[in-house]
Length: 130
Image 1: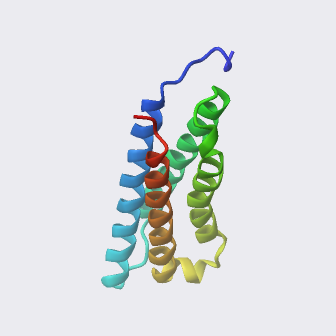
Image 2: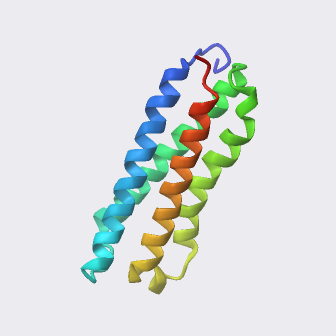
Image 3: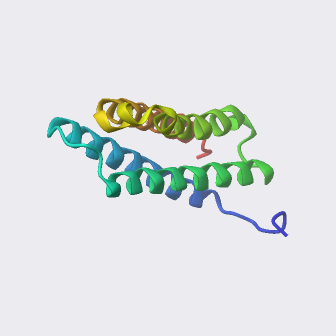
């Protein structure tokens, strides 16, 4: 059934933009909490979770497009780019709770996730035909 589903590449670009927006929002929120000396609140963790869901959806869309035969030149960009961004959020939650609450860990790791997402998006755009 999933093989019969045809996904237009534009969806990948739209969700990729959502990844950039959510990772940037996560970075800004984590940085502001660190500047104000506050612990990360529940809604901040909800934002981080929502960001991870958007990243996972983007990764699955990229894999589906590869399955459709689109973008074989971008194979490593899809796999490494999608999983790399998600890795920084996973690493954040693997840290001890004291490090997560400090704010620096969240700021650094969400910053790395945003930088990696931006890099992946930019490299992916270079291979789009046209």
